[in-house]
Structures are given as C-alpha cells and as structure tokens.
Image (cartoon, rainbow, N blue to C red; front, top):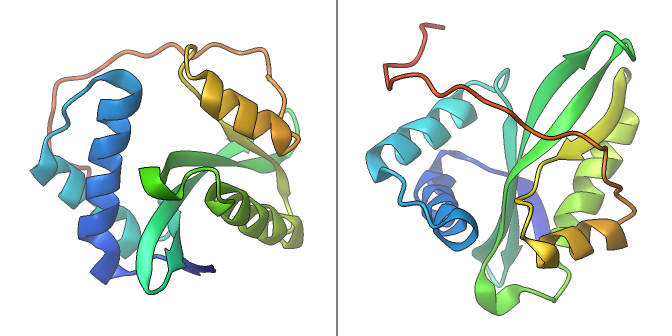
Amino acid sequence: MRIREAQLGDVAIIAEYNARLAQETEGKELDRATLLAGVRALIENPARGVYFVAEEAGQVVGQVMITFEWSDWRNGTFWWLQSVYVREEFRGRGVFRSLFEHVRGLAGQEAGVCGLRLYVERENERAKSAYRRLGMTDAGYEVFETVLAPRTAAPE
C-alpha cells in the first residue's frame, strides 16, 4: 500500500468518497458540485489543509483530510483528521491504520503540532473501535454548530 499526498487528479474520487461517507454515516446526500469545488479548493490551497490517499494496485482505496486548529491552551496546532473514508471492500485490511500512521509520523516531525483529533458520529461504533485500537481516546467534548446559508467561498 502506498500513502501519498492527494493531487488535482484525485479530486473526483475524493469527492465521490466524501459523498459515500456522508451517506453511510449520516444518511446525507451532499451536492456533488459543491463537493468537487470544496475538494479542489483545499488541494489548490495547502493553507486550508491536505488530503492523503492510500493506493492499492494503482487505485485510491482510502483517504484522510487534515485541517489545522491553533490551541492557545497548548501553544500549538492540532491536526484534525476529517473526511476519513476507506472503500468498503478494503475495510479491515489496515488502510486507515496506514493513513493514520503516516499522518502521525508527519505530525511528530513538525514543530508546534500538539496532537491529532477527529470527530465521529455518536452511533458509529465501528469507527470508534478502530480509533481506540490506534490509541486514540474520547476527548470528552461534544460538537455544536450553527449552519449558515450557502454562499460562495471567501476570497483568498
């Protein structure tokens, strides 16, 4: 298995996997045009984050997106793991473990990175079990949000 940083040629498959992720975990249908634009916007601007993909026999079989959050409490940056997806037929074969270990290794080499975080649906016991096996623990937080009306992305 090969782990690499995603490139523009990966936009369509990453957007597809994000759509599957939303459907499988939350029963949500996401707008494909918005997904494509959002994935492209991140890949084109690394300040927003980075995607890593896992390849098996030349095909993308899994992904993870990293975004960044400054913590004044820790005087460091958390790397948030998001858009975690492994193609169904490749689950249970170490794809996410490989992606996670790759990200953890990179984070460990970066000055100022204070930890890795992710959020998970309350009922997604399979994912929670996988995260625990990797040594992650429940941070004790719940996520609250306010959803704003759709609009175009902010200028660079």
